[in-house]
Each structure stands twice: as structure tokens, then as C-alpha cells.
Length: 45
Image (spheres, rainbow, N blue to C red):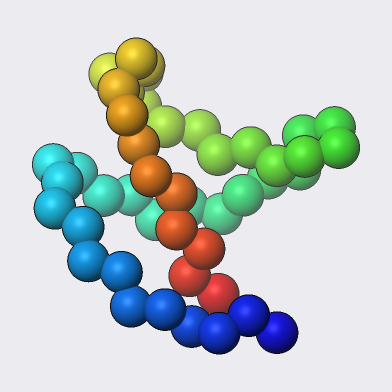
């Protein structure tokens, strides 16, 4: 089991979503306005 880590971020918007299966990996959909933007994904459970 991985150790929990505190992470602090400064950003513009936040979404909480569930990862869905997509072939051999997972997928999370974000708003179309985010295309071409840099994002960070944090595993919270």
C-alpha cells in the first residue's frame, strides 16, 4: 500500500471525477476548454 502524501496546488479550476475503463488503461473526461492546457491528476483514494 502506498503512503499518503500531502500535495498543495495553486490552480484555476478543480474537478472530482471517477476514472473509467478504456481498453487497457483508464480515462477521465475534462471540459473541451481544457484542451491544450496543462493539468495534474492526483489519486485521492
